Length: 260
Image (cartoon, rainbow, N blue to C red; front, side):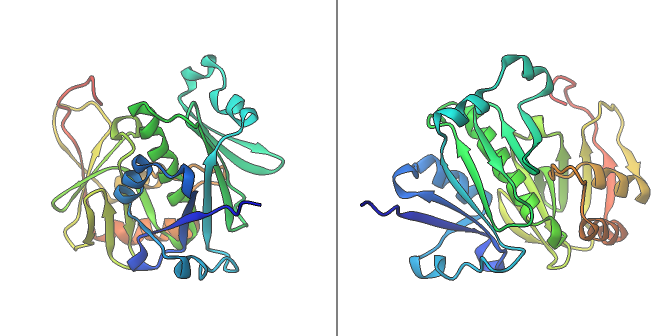
């Protein structure tokens, strides 16, 4: 009898976040390794993987496997659903189930540490890999929601967070840990300084305009990557309130209305 061998990864390992993923070794393609590295996941040794604290309520371990033929029917769905976008969130037997059409389907039992993601066995197209990136960002944002971690679609330039719509971000995201005073992005990590700027890049404007503190709180409350029936958590609300004291926000000037 063959014993399944898994490769485990931890999100931002040096900061000890209790967020993990695992792949079967035979299904772990180099393109997945590249994606996980960009998102901030590090490989765990066999000894480290055995110490994952599954007994703790805030631990989340996502098992990623190739989808069965039955699940592929759900993943592929109907072309008629395209008008609602590639993503959907539903309840199946009381459990939130997230689907990104033609890429994967993820079960999210919120009160349990073990989650599952079934992905298409042939993720060869660029847009499919962008879809997988989006799924993993959704997983991270949900897994860390009760920790008060904030997650937004966009990128970082110097001391400015450029926040945009998901469709324009190609799955690139920014995570803010107000408690640890850290910001994480594809470029790595940086300290959360006292002069942080937030640039809102989701409206067609031809003149930059300042955002009031109330605008910043409202925008950051409704624009997170968290996809949940219950909305953002109380710890996230507090983090947004605390962050709004020291940041400045403005609306970006539209360079091309086609891309915004």
